[in-house]
Length: 142
Image (cartoon, rainbow, N blue to C red):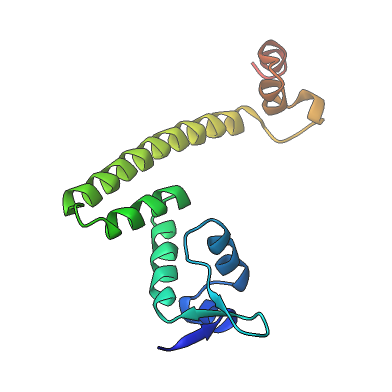
């Protein structure tokens, strides 16, 4: 059995030592054995485990969702359809976020067009809208 120190594990998995500790505290990876001098010693399998977490995070899964994916992976009764369902839910959430971000982008673009970029901040229609003073910003820039 090949054992790794926390530094070697982190390097092989492409994460930081702090990330390894964080995932350990959150219960995403098992607490490792310790040497007599109290150094953490991880089994080689944890490299794949950390890479899984890293890739799942890159795809937008939260740490709680990743925990659920690990539970599915370890559940002999789980099926591909269970994993697919989790992924479809994630797709729906991402599409909803994209819609929300598109609305925010459109609103910010409209605000930017309303401001000519000249004059004092007190007359800025963007500040007027953000302050909730729509009428005053309309008076300064019809």
